[in-house]
Structures are given as structure tokens and as C-alpha cells.
Amino acid sequence: MTIYIFTILTLFAFAYIEINYPVSSKTKRIMYVIAYILLVFQMGLRWETGTDWSNYLDHFESIDDIASLSPLENGLEFGYNLSIWLVKWLSSEYTIFLLFHAIVFYIFLFYSFRRNTPYFFIALLLFYTATMGVMGCNRQLIALVICLCSLRYVLDKNPIKFFSLVFVAFNFHASAFLFIIYYFINRDIKPYALILILAASIIIGNTSLPVTAFSFIGNLFGINVGKKVVFYLESASDVLAESGPSLLGLFKRLLFLFIFYYNRKRISKILPYYNLMLNGYIAGLAFYFIFYNSLLIMISRAGLYFNIMEPLLLSSQICLYKRKENRIAIACLLLLLSVLLFFQSIAPYPDLFLPYKGIFINSDYFRIMY
Image (cartoon, rainbow, N blue to C red; front, side):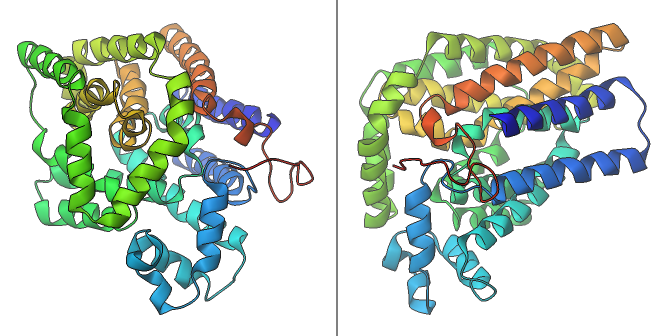
């Protein structure tokens, strides 16, 4: 637990400085480098920590020639297979691949967050704690940050670059195709339209349509996708059913939506990308209502492409507060929220994250992986 507490406090300290004090570009670069190294080493030097550990390790070891890169051979996307194959030219050690994965992941994440929020470190803190529970999802995390990099091309109205990046992300995790929605939602959503969207989502969520549509998409993309769908549903449904959806989680989402939407006009005058991020969050809430009654795995995994907007939107609210004491109060509230998000994120599988085990930290700790 020590490594997590240290990381949270470090990111909060940087966020506190960024929010309340004028910081030179040199000082900010130093903070970026410290945060980057800390996060890369934590993700890249872990061992038997996080979800899907055994599956990804076995898959890494199975990639040994050109033929093994085919999704038809092992069921995983070509882009991810290719990245393993290229790294294996340098080393066959899984830790080297995890370091490479972490380096690339945080390069893309830092790039995207620096573009999409004026308060980088508070957004990074919230992202770190809210997504700790998916730290082992190697393919989807890379797909997520590639998709985040494509957001700028929605505002630039450059469909070729946007869809090209989403296609690259799709080759790391098929769920990235959901990100295509962002290209069509960069518009103002009126209050009555918002109510209709959420009401329709609730109605659909109480029918058999989500399961039917999910099965259709699985068949459309082939038998390998269908097998993965069955595997995820059989292995994770019981745990997810125990941990969510919760009334507290739903209340949090609706409360945040109210705050984000209420402040939309004022913040979008300062941040031109705010409206797009807000609409992505609304799409995520609709996604939640559609699948909360049937396919919880869709909320926890596929919903990640929409829930990623929450830390960016939360950090953007600070733009409205000019007085230092107000910013300090907001920063402290967000620190408390980040701690709550951390425990909520790892709640389905706390034994896979606590304690943190790496090649240099708690290396002798015995953990049963599943």
C-alpha cells in the first residue's frame, strides 16, 4: 500500500502547487519528469500485480514467430501481437515488455492530458486512482490513450487522422471502435435532449436489446471475439455483480453530470474542448444505463472510453475558482475523492493489487493469480 500512498501524495503535491502558485516552465518540466518516471516504473516493474496477469504472460511467451502474430492464431489483436514481437527482438523478458508498454502508455497519456486540461496534475491524480483496477488490461490501456490522442482531430475537423488513430487503437483492443461516437457528438446538447437520452437509455437497459446487440456485434467480428465475450462474462460476472452497479456510484455519476452540465457555458468559453468531453461523459452515462441490468463487463471495460472524461472534466471545474482559499478547498475535496476512487476501482479484485508486488518491492510475496 505504501507505493500507492506515496504516488497519490506526490501527484497531489504537484497538483496543489500547479493550482495555487505560478510555476515556471522549468519547474513544471521537472514535475512532469518525476511523475512520469514514478508512474512508468510502478506500471512497468510490477510482477503478479493487476488483472489478467497469467493470461497476458502466457500470451507473451506464445509469441515466437510471424505466424503467431495472427489474431486467428491466439485470439488477440494484431497490433498488440506485433508490439510483443518487436520487443522480443531486444529481450524475451516480460518485464522489458511491461516497461516498454508503460513508457508508450504514459507518453500518450501525458500528451493528451496536457492538451485537454489546464490542470494536468489533478487530472492525472484522478485518472491514476480511478483506473488502478484496470492496470493489468494491457491492450485496452494502449487503445485508450491512442483514442485520446485522436480527440484533437475532432475539433480540427480532420476525419482522416481521427479515424486512422481509432483504427490503430482497434488493432490493440476491438472495443476502441466505440470511440468513433466522439466524432459525431461535438455539439450542444439541450436540457430536453439530455433528459430524452437518459430516459431512452434506462428503457433500453430494461429490455433484452443490449444482450441481443452485443451478441450480434460479437458474431460480426468473428468467432474469436465471441469466445472472449463468453470468457469475460463467465469469469467476471459474479465478482462484478457483487461490486456494482451501486446506488452510490450512480449518485456520483448523476451529481457530476449536473455539475459539469451546469457549468458548461462558462467553462466552454475558456476551454473549447470542454463540450466534447462533456458529451463523451453523457454518452458514458447512457452506456451505463443501457448495460447496468445485463452486461456489467461493458460498464467496467468498454465504458472506460467515456469514463476517462471524468478526471478531465473535474479538473476543468477549477477554472471557475479564482480565490486561493477556494482552490485549496477544491483541491482537498478532489484528494479525498481520489482516495475513494482508488478503493472503488480495486474493489472487485483487491487481493490482486494489495500489496503492490514488483520485481524490487515485495518480490517474495506469494499471490494466487486468477
